[in-house]
Length: 300
Length: 300
Image: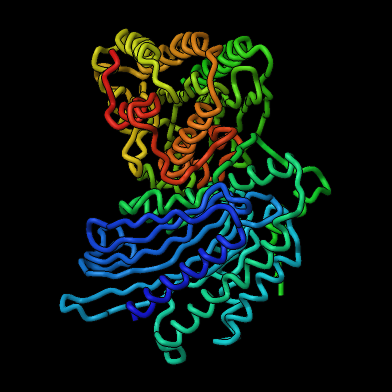
């Protein structure tokens, strides 16, 4: 399973980066290969200062070895070996009319002393963070998510949509990071879902990513915008930073377990503002966004 | 003691904000009074878009009531009442030639069921974060810190200077936030220092703040700088954000205990950049700064 899934995310990284380069038409992804001293490594691909994409990363990694102490405590296990691989991406477009997107698909194994797998699971998801709310874009994104889920279990979409709303939430601001999508974790073999079934589900979602995001980019990338709208985008990007640095388990985990800092923090936006006590004008488009972030909607 | 110290920080807030307004010559502090539903409140003063200061806050607060659950665990005590007051300031100048400064002075009391004080202590410090390193500025700042300390105990400066280096450290980057200063906490009555002695020490440091910072601002505020130097400042400000959101106990504490968000996050810089895998040129001024941040120096 680990070889099959790692092969899958390698191919997916290729297809996502080539598609995004084609859309951008100017910038290309810079590739950095890195090794983890304790075992494994990764292939980081970052795009910067494009026509469409101001900054983004589409990274894969596969790491293995002794489970770090901090992870032992987290998973409540002893001194075991592990393998983990995944693809993580965050794309920050230049235009405030084009939403930021985040996605991640990952697979985890733990072994006993003999090297036998004692636990294994998939996790992942994809979610959208607009700066201006086009309801049809949120509907499109969620519709693609739902279609991918429904092929496997009609209960998946409502369940994983809700988990996404709960997870990507800036509790200290009492607002969602964005309009959500899917979030799932600890997808383990059960009576109804084998690991092969989970593989089919996770790759179905992974394969739906470009379909979920690209039509939105195509539709919004050439809209004009003002400096005020750009400022608003940079202020909202500040909330994105707050979520990733204060609340996101993956980021904090990476920072505390000596992960490759630049690959982890590629998720941070290129230009960000913090203004004291900023509030959008009553009845404005900016305020409409905040209202939806404070009260997550059902988009499909 | 609590009334005496709160009176002190009220007066100190006045003297600091008037001096900074005089230096800026354009922007004035906007004042927000706020109340804490559970008891107490604060007086937040924020300056933005000045000639010299791009964004800064000089805030005081005095809060009391039942110790929040999260603080009970932190202090390892039960269901007790508390009082806490303090002044916190962060100043982000516009010019990359002028360092950012942070300072905080605070006092804490805990009570038993009868309202008798069972524990009380002072804490605080001040530290400097330059974007370009003028060694004489770091020396000046530390000399003022040392002079204030030496009046009370010759061991204070080396001890609190080292604690500052240890505390304001971005462990995930393996570099200091800035060139340090002083950091002290849990200053409790002992055989050699009564609470009155600690009051004298903490107010001595508080009174030294303007002397430590203002001459540096005056000396550097009119230097010219390039867009590249401004970019470097914004990238370094990103490290400031990383420290405050990932590591700073005060910030995380405030975010997790329902503090006034805008007063806590006034510390975040106005304009910030994150570039992927940015490294200064060999032999440049920017690299010289990094070297000092990776290997804290003794400035006096």
